[in-house]
Image (cartoon, rainbow, N blue to C red; front, side, top):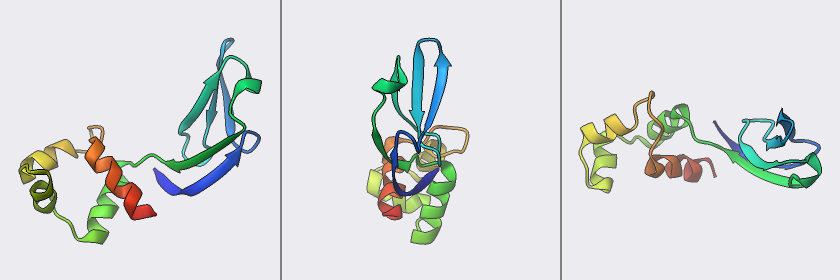
Length: 106
């Protein structure tokens, strides 16, 4: 899920203890990992997060911009069926599709 740019201190973020030897620092809004360490004192003091684009963000981006799979295929030098296949909800979004919602949310 993408969200507006947020800045969190370590105290505002979510620190999760995975096991005796690992702590993770996560965004409290989207859960994206921003650091790991063997001791919470070694985690970053400050994080910045925009979230991670999901298929819902991709669909909303395409709808608001009025883009079709044919439009994306022309830009990529591919076919509309290929774009449709690469952006199926059961698959991870390709890197080219991930970058577009970031620009849109700014």
